[in-house]
Amino acid sequence: MLGESNMNKKVVLIGGGHGLSNLVKGFKDDNSLDLTIVVSSADDGGHTGKIRKEFKIGAVGDLRMVLSELIKGDSSLKEIFDYRFNLLHGVSKVSLGNLMITSLWLKYKDIDKVIDYFRIKEGIRAKVFLSSNNPVTLCAKCGNDEVIECEHFIGESNQKIVDLYSDVKAECNKEMLDEIKQADMIVLGPGSLYTSVGAVLCIEEIKKAINSSKASLVYVCNIMTQDGETRGYSVEEHENALSSIMGRKIDRVIVNNGKVSDDVLERYKKENSEFVSCREVKDYYEFGDLVEIVDGKVRHNSALTKKIILSQ
Image (cartoon, rainbow, N blue to C red; front, side):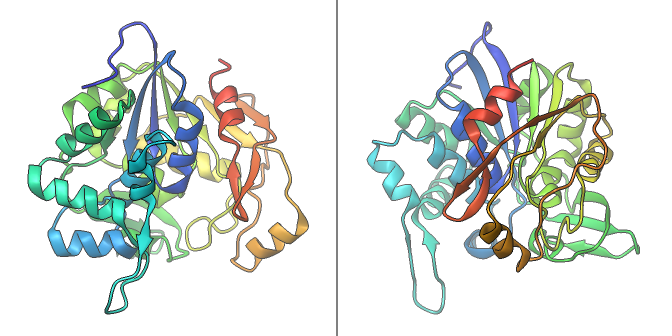
C-alpha cells in the first residue's frame, strides 16, 4: 500500500464519526509521520444503515468522512464526495460519497481495493482501513443483563454498558493488525465512546493486536457527554470504559479544560449534554484548551490536540 515508511514515527488513529475525521485534519499533512487510520465499521443508522441492509456490505459513512478529510481541498472529488441530495420516498440527505464507495465495493468485492483506488487517485499517504471488512452488528450487554443489538439502538439506550461484542467474527485486514502491533503510538478517540471507539476496540483481533503492541496508548477524551450513551460520565468513566473493553490500561489521557459560551452550553443542555467533568486529576492526564466551535458544534481543535498528543 502507499505511504510505507520504516523511519517515520508510526501513529495509529482509531475511532469513527466526526471525532475521528476531525482529528485526521490535524495529522494528515504531517509527512514526518507514518499514519494509519482504523475506522469503525459499526454504523448502521441513517443512509449508511439503508445501504448496509440493501447491499449486505459494511458501513461506509464513517469511512467516507475520513477519506473526504484526506482528499486535497482543491480536488473536484472532494466536492463530489461531500455532496448530499434528497431522493424520492422520504430518503433525505443522501451522500454521493457513500454511493461512490458502495458502487466500487460492489464492483471489486473488496473494501481494501476501494480504499486503495481513492488513495492512488488522490495521492493519499495515510493508510486507511475499516475495522472489519465484513458486515458486523455491534451488540452491548447492559448492567441489567439486557442485550441491545445495533449501533444506533445502543447509542440511544441510556443504559449502563458493561460489555461490547460483534454478532459475528470480524474479518480484519492483516496489514492493519500489523500496523497496530508495530505502532509507536495508538490514539483512541475522540468520538462516541461505545458506538465508535469502543466498537473498534471490542473486535477480538484488534484487541489482541493492541495488547501485543508496545505502543504508547493515548485517549483523547470527549469534551461533551452524549445523551443515550454517556450521560453524566466523567473523564475517568470514559477512560475506564475503554480500558475495560480492550483489557489494557491507557497510558495518557488528553483532557479539555477550555470553556464555551453560555448560549452553546444551553443548546447542548437541551440535548441532555454537558461538559465532561474531571473528578480526579491523575499524573498521566494532560490538559489543554481544546475547544473549537464548528457550525455551532463543540469540536476539538485538531492542530492543538495533535500538538499535545505528539508532545511525548
